[in-house]
Image 1 (cartoon, rainbow, N blue to C red):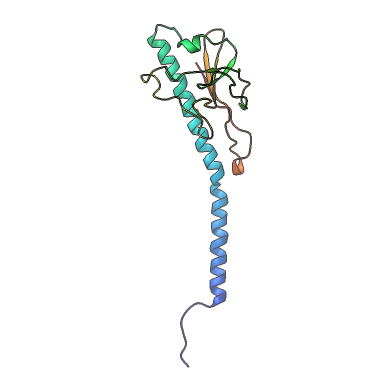
Image 2 (image 1 turned 180 degrees about the horizontal axis):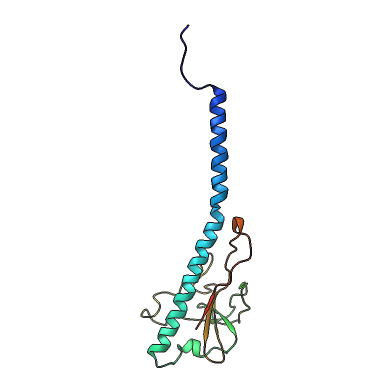
Length: 164
């Protein structure tokens, strides 16, 4: 009788089961939902900094005068950044915003090539970013809807805002 070389069915099933368990463990450890949320939050942080940098550069280039739409804002009120005339971002979870939006689209490409929009639902009309000017003229720009960074994307969303 000739003996054949190879694996038995039981050996193959055991190896496949071990590979499946290891793949599942790695998939849980990597947690793609969490990584996606972290990536979108990183983009939000970058966008917020870019918007504020553009406003500050404009102010610096114009001898301390704010951009016209920023100068016209009521101090201490939060405004959604976007082109909407009314009906600001009522879904902004970070702060309560006014009915009117603040339009930064004409600030100029020297300062801001295009107004950034939230990576998960921002539009030109309502970018999902907000702007606040305090009584001393300091500007705060923040993200309305950051995402949780816990397991599976759950957890308390971080506050994403910058003030200058």
